[in-house]
Image 1 (cartoon, helix red, strand yellow):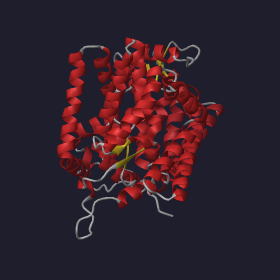
Image 2 (cartoon, helix red, strand yellow; image 1 turned 60 degrees about the horizontal axis):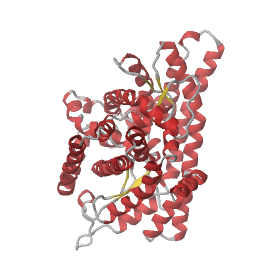
Image 3 (spheres, one colour; image 1 turned 180 degrees about the vertical axis):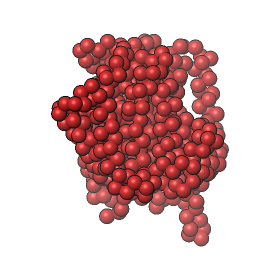
Image 4 (tube, one colour; image 1 turned 135 degrees about the vertical axis):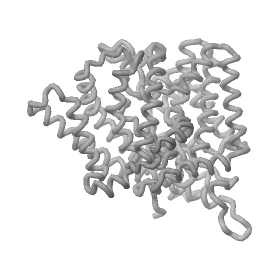
Length: 485
């Protein structure tokens, strides 16, 4: 059975499997078949568009970044080759495939009995994030049940975090009753929430560093298209510092500037198409929301019947504050990798994934780009240590399950998957086999879950007040929206 599931997914891929799941979910929500079919098509078209853009841009940005790294003289033993290798390897492991099947069943059960208000199966593809940690654990411990249990546990606390930030994500990105819920891009909600009082104390909430501010103050130079060209120019120059007197260098610099400008212009358009896959489902959730006796809708933040659709994080990638913050962090993280004492990880391919990685921070801080960058610096720096520690394990597991390691590379990692401080701590506790450490992770989760079940209104109200402390910010004017046509 597991082998058949693997064959089906490897044959059809996310661009086919995800639309089928969207269609099934839509029909179950009593969306008209024609509308459900269009939702499925939009999902497939959006995922295909994302794939085309990223696959075309990745080789270019990787080449420039490698040149930038060579110019600085960075020599680090663990090289980031992208998340794709990790996702493929998980489908070659028994633990990974077992979670893909039984994890889906658990997600349905958790939602049905009310343990979570996030409907995860609609985000089926991103289950590989849970599968990869179970696969690594099995490679280390050879304990199937412990490893599968780790994947299940990570699903539980990811759903809790997804629900905590769901109201903020839905509000900021403008997708009703939806939230991201992928493990590898979820834990950033923790520093975004915990560090916010510190950032406010030093006045970052008063710094109007948002897409709107850039547009108002810089005019045409504040547009995402122009900012992309400017950032591309800067990164391109950093990648060609030793050859700025040559025509070839300036050819690459200007080409990269235009390509980055294109990404920041085209990606929001593709994101708009992708978001249409979820709009009928979100609208149907809205129709079923509880109404007061007088016919008026309850406050949406406190509606006990409200639930959220788990959507792919590609929905928010192209939002201006998100992609701008992510691109700014690219050269910063390369520099930090060079100067951070004890770091062994060289982030390369997954640097283009940073906009995915900051979505929760953007949502919680209401698009405050300065806060997003500061949170990213702190959390992803800790993440470099996590991926450095995991380098040997990740390399061994990925190669063991059939993914070839590039020639000349000794150790590999995925900055997107492994640079996860909290996930790494949970992983360390579980692979230790020490039930005290494992029990502590479970107790911590149960405390969060109880607070969420009993204090959801207060948590959401607090996060709303917290985001509103960013003076003058109303959220991105270009956040993702959709119509019903």
